[in-house]
Image (cartoon, rainbow, N blue to C red; front, top):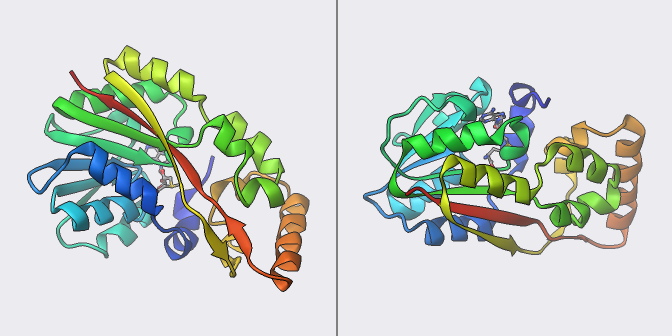
Length: 239
Ligand SMILES: C[S@@+](CC[C@H](N)C(=O)[O-])C[C@H]1O[C@@H](n2cnc3c(N)ncnc32)[C@H](O)[C@@H]1O
């Protein structure tokens, strides 16, 4: 179990939106300034605030970590942030779009979340779950290269996509679809890795972590490190 209250500062400092994830959330959700949108497990508000900036939609975020929410609230006077869990969403049926990024692997019972999301979405509203497939976890660049132990640890906690699809259908969602996105950049500063801003780095041994950081430092001496973060977006529509 990762304590986001404890790592909120490192998270806020290092984690940014994935431009292609944001692009797809914006364009494929069909939302505009008249929409009402909720991000579940919004953390420090990276995605929901970017969505607000792009669309002018009425934006809400919910997360169980008070400290993550504190940081989110400081960044917007218009978005509303409310403490809460994905498994018990305390909202009425008003949303056009509900989404989560990097959260579903924290949930023991994703179906409970899907049922809750179904209840608070208006008819025709969309749900999007942004997560990692097994294939993405096995080939993460640079995490799987420098910290191969993260692969096993994350395969244990991430739900297989087929299982998520089944749970979504059981909750009532239709028109399920998947998209994978990626973008590449060159890493010249590994402070985010040293600060363990990626939760899987909290799941490996001290020795494996130290070895990975040392290898990254060695490679940085001869150039930058190629990073290609990839995500899978799983979509469904409420009838
Ligand atoms: C990796 S962070 C992602 C934050 C944000 N979505 C982003 O992409 O910047 C995971 C977030 O999930 C939240 N979380 C953990 N368990 C949760 C639960 N049961 N319901 C809702 N959010 C949860 C954590 O507090 C944390 O803010």
